[in-house]
Length: 222
Image 1 (tube, rainbow, N blue to C red):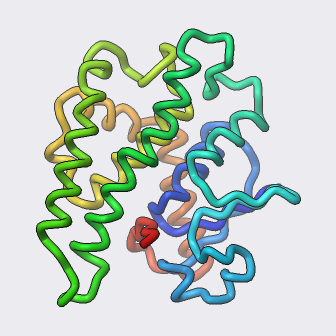
Image 2 (spheres, helix red, strand yellow):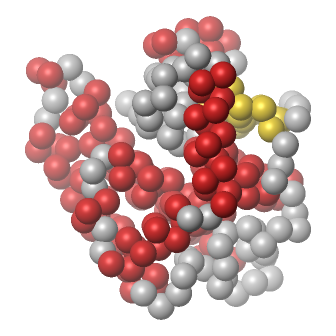
């Protein structure tokens, strides 16, 4: 059984959601945020001190979008994966990584300069600039989502998990009110998925069982 090291509502929520979509067995280890500060022993597992960390036998992974791709491949065939021969294969890979590199990255700067830095180092201008950057790039999805319920291949895929996490993070940052209409409707659909609901419940249950606080703590990599 694989093990996922996780902080509540951090990037590690992507593989957690994927595991629930796949109905795959897993062990969930919840850590205080940030683990490199509050769980120094975790550095022996992951020298970066970040979550997620996915351990599957000899395989150890630290990148959440790559984990989504890995889990699909390990559980293939699955409709969550777009295959090489499908028309939307390239779009699927692009959307899978767009969720992390284009949508999540600017939000980590909002987190850092609005919330995580000491008061004297916070920068409202930097936070506001990167919030606008995120929303501008998010709006590029609006025409497509106005025409179809999911991002690609005519079905829900791992790309939706990747982008969906970016929307979850945006909700924590009070940016959801600025979602354009089709993106807002898409986010509502994602939140209603049974696997999303199970993943949210699983992280809370594991946190309670392991004595962790229930305050969401999105991952930040300075």
